[in-house]
Amino acid sequence: MTAASAYTRLTPDEIEALAIEATKHPLVDEVCEYMEVNPELEAWMITQCERVLGKGGKRISAQWLIERARAEAHLDIDPNGSPFRINNSYGGVITRILAYENPDLADLFEFRRLVSAA
Image (cartoon, rainbow, N blue to C red; front, side, top):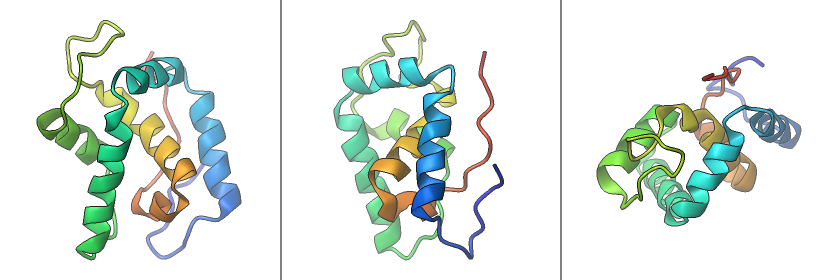
C-alpha cells in the first residue's frame, strides 16, 4: 500500500483496506487487549485529533499520538509484559482503527505498509 497523498482524500474502500490490514498484523491481539485495559485511550486520541483539526492541522503521526499519550493520558501499564506505558509498535494499528471507526479523521494520518514488529 502506498502512502496517502496530502492532496487526496481516502475513499471508504481505502479506509476499509487499512482496517483489514490492521487485523492481519501480528500485534493486533496485543493492541486490542491494551485498548481494553485502557478504554479511555481511544476517546483521548480522538480528542487530540480533533484539536489538531480545529487549529487547522493537516497531519498527525502515529508516533506523535503515542508520545502524547505516554506523557499526558492516564494509562495503565501494558498488560502484554512491556515495561512501557504504551508500546511504540502499536501506533500503526491504532491509527488504522481510528481511521476506520472515525473516517473524518482518516486523512490526518499518512499510512504506510505495516511491518511486523516480530
